[in-house]
Length: 240
Image 1 (cartoon, helix red, strand yellow):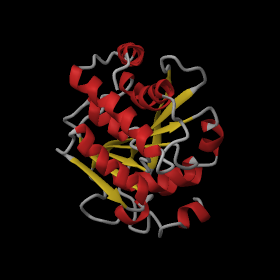
Image 2 (cartoon, one colour):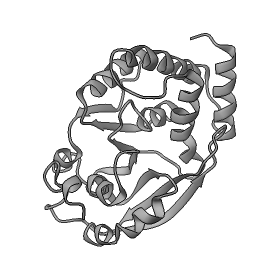
Image 3 (cartoon, helix red, strand yellow):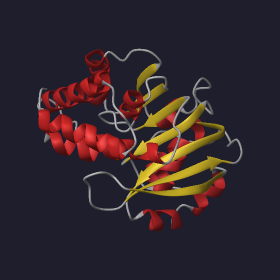
Image 4 (cartoon, rainbow, N blue to C red):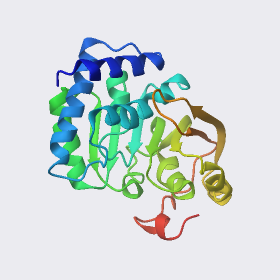
């Protein structure tokens, strides 16, 4: 996708986030847009289909947390959808050991094809799984330095999906809008049961976007019981 105006927007936006893109990263982001738009005509991957809006609402919105957190090591993105924020993390920091988890098979197939398009094969796994199931696999439970999720579920549900993957001293980064305060009020029981505490609330200034964007950062305070997460579907039906 050769679009000078789009490239300028991408470079300027990431520069505002203190990320200097290489030619390879710029190529990958352009290819991502092109492939996402193309595949979205076949499957419902995103409602955002205009290239500049994809840059602002998906790419920069995903990357904004890099101003606040040094994201490295092992990262798992729960309910990654079309790869946000996980794939953007990997493009920014190719050294990440990344796991993407998505329950929608069409989106998983898109992500696997995207790996080929972007030539991203090392230290990346894509799972067609429910988080509730994968979290009981000893190879993934309590194994990650960072657990992240964006636009997946209310906080009291999302914590049950994400906390079991977080290792001791790891961090959980959850993207939220202005309603996060009400969600926090509704999550006191979940925080207690899952042995997790809120340590930071980051208000993100996303280039070219109006509106409030927040990332809530949590830290696990103790190993949680094997009861959690409960069986697939139960956290959503009966939130903690």
